Amino acid sequence: MGCPLQDDVVLTAPMFAGLDRESSSALVERMKTHDFVRGQVLFHEGEPGDRLYVVRSGKIKLGRRSNDGRENLLAVLGPGEMFGELSLFDPGPRTATATVVADAVILELGHAELIAWLEANPGVAQHLLQALARRLRRTNEALADLVFSDVPGRVAKALLDLSTRFGEKTDEGVRVAHDLTQEELAQLVGASRETVNKALADFAARRWVRREGRAVVLLDLDRLERRAR
Image (tube, rainbow, N blue to C red):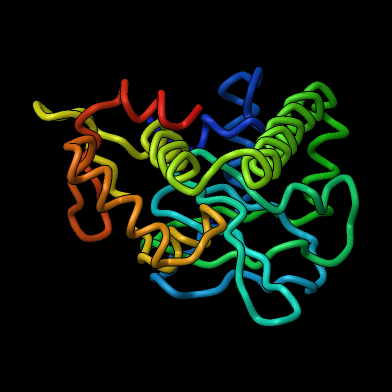
């Protein structure tokens, strides 16, 4: 079924960039809406991929599992962000597993419908390629961080990145409801849970952050930014 367009965060997704309202409305009406709860899997790594997804609300994590069973979190996505777009340019097995982190509403568009729509709106392909380029750039940065940055630096950078998308300003600083468990946060940073917890405890002792379950309040952005470099 379709979804109402008024003030819809979905329209911030790259696939709608540069479109007029009529074209946006036409595409959204062709998308299917699904409700998911935390822990549900949209697709697994290795499965055939033939659809694109846009997050309307909630959070989705993209992760890969190594041969020895360890999981690495590639990204945490929120409202207005899309995933599965690789199926547009290179139909084939999924390169990651998509799991719901916080109850979510997801819009879905099949490959055939997406191709037909792009043929009618060829300029949008450029925005999709730009989105892919940004994701590739983030992946390259993450690889560089694993080589050149220590764990506290990666933790600081991850918190700052999460704050740009999920942060809410408060009188104390920026509250980031990331909805990640301690293990998931460690997977996102690429380190053990114990090492990440030690870094967070140190940040808290310095009054740079305050931990609140699956959220954190960033109290000193300047010092976190310096630590992330």
